[in-house]
Image 1 (cartoon, one colour):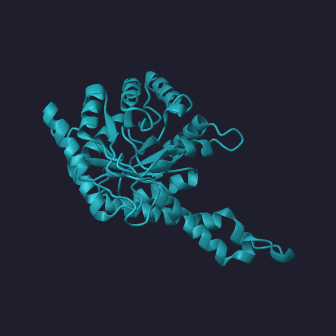
Image 2 (cartoon, rainbow, N blue to C red; image 1 turned 45 degrees about the vertical axis):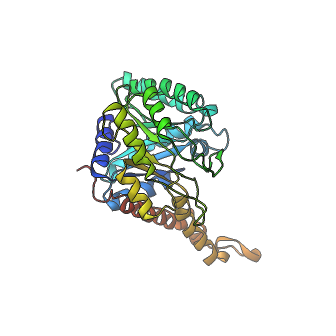
Image 3 (cartoon, rainbow, N blue to C red; image 1 turned 180 degrees about the vertical axis):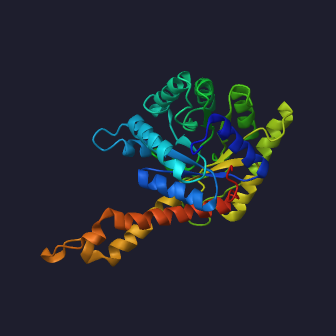
Length: 340
């Protein structure tokens, strides 16, 4: 069962929460980065989450027409075929979709999965993200209600981001300031609008100072202990212990202690993109610098096919990214937890 069924995905998330570990959610932009993510999970004996952002899907759709749905569907179908060789289970997820891209990305993908489910098959993706952090909370949650109903009907989990994450992700930008902290009132309003599972399961990307990208020490103040306040505040109101399944956005560059605190407070998924991008690109840069006169036809020479063949440096890139994924599994305590 290389791609999680809806039932298995729910089991994965339940196991993570009960065991206080989280799955690395690795952004991919190609078949090669997909293989790198799968390899990293396999080497760590961890299940995981593969995700495609709007920008990643546009890139996958090809530069001729940059169609996001085509790109996402194509890689998801590819993943359904190749993931079976890795001995682990992964869920497929779409990352960060703001309001102006819903009609061109998440809504059509929900329709694709709805048709599959109607035909007795599993959904193509196991979860989708609605990023309404640039909207008012009222508008954000109103759209979230609509999408949650559609997702639940297609046996899909919805991820919602209710307050801003700093930095920039695929064109969505937020300043790094005091607004980057979700309040208990924000969380209560979310529970009132989306329920606590009875209307469909959702993952909650709450803000505790998170910033996309990597910043030098001192520029970002993470407060993962805030997640405990949100759990307790909403839990007390609704009589439910630890009601939220949290997502850690802006996970690249976080300290081990920050990650550990987040796990103790209900984080079941942590996004990684910046770190894995660098881990993929760094070996390529190394290869190019060391083989300058081979990858280029310098001064009228012919170069060296063995060094500019994309397979040569591509293998190093895959290995570099896979290693970073195994490190993420160790940091998130998911190593060795794969479903047997």
